[in-house]
Length: 284
Picture 1: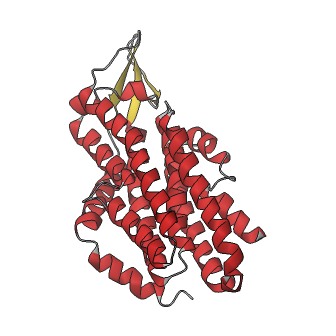
Picture 2: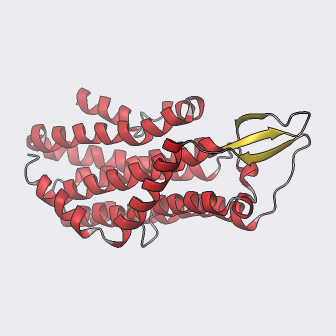
């Protein structure tokens, strides 16, 4: 149980989530992207091994416990993300909500649950790396002498009108947000469908229903940012404006790979699902 608590802390599940928004906001954005994707993938990989190999004899204790954690994680992450005004903090609470969605697949205790979790982690990891790569390029510019480029522009109001000035970058970010929201034809939709279907197969239909409702509510704050970028005029702050700095090679490659992966996994998920399905047989 103590090992499980440590892993829940690592993935940012409630009630061990408090560190997530502060660390996501305070860390350099490339490190934040690494934590959001790679650290979460590693932690859930360890959790799958623990739950499916070590804890099956404690199924009657573990399933109610993890189900309760999944529910409060999905709900708290979604509700608190709605009121955020900082992009990185919004993505942090989004990460908390996604930890709850992934736990739905973990608690299913079926091979399809393993497959769904692995696919979800791949889809979420790609979108997270791409989203934080975009955040690194959107900066504040002082309109004074020299027009110095300063910190990242992370306040939501600073993203208003970005889609009109930089449609390609804003379009990529919108794609990642739609994947987070689980919109069809994105990898996020397939991931959520896989973990919710696994929960139904494992006899936890009620948990899948809660997940679907929380996912529907989460669409609001993702779409709000898309509307802000493409359908809202920028409101200038005296002495400051927002610009997009020229991306270096690795940043652009990360965004390009994330876009391609998000689309391909949403349109043609079968080969990857089959691969993870084969891998799930060897996990126990």
